[in-house]
Length: 88
Image (cartoon, rainbow, N blue to C red; front, side, top):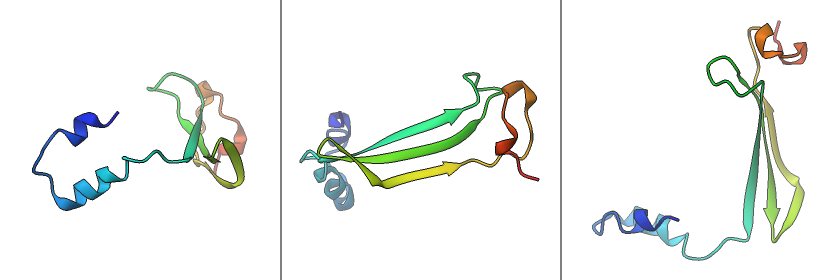
């Protein structure tokens, strides 16, 4: 996947070579990211929340999660956003 990065410049700085060397071994930990939006139209719909969970050795780690709701300062009736996402 990152072969083009590895071969892009043979005279890369040392920090970049160190960073790329971390991809030589396959990690047993992955992060699954999920977003919730008010719709599919990028011009009028908004992102409501982000969530992430860790997967280690093909097991979901319930204790290693992240969840955040994006505050909506303006009610957009066309998007169907409920009042749960509004700030006074």
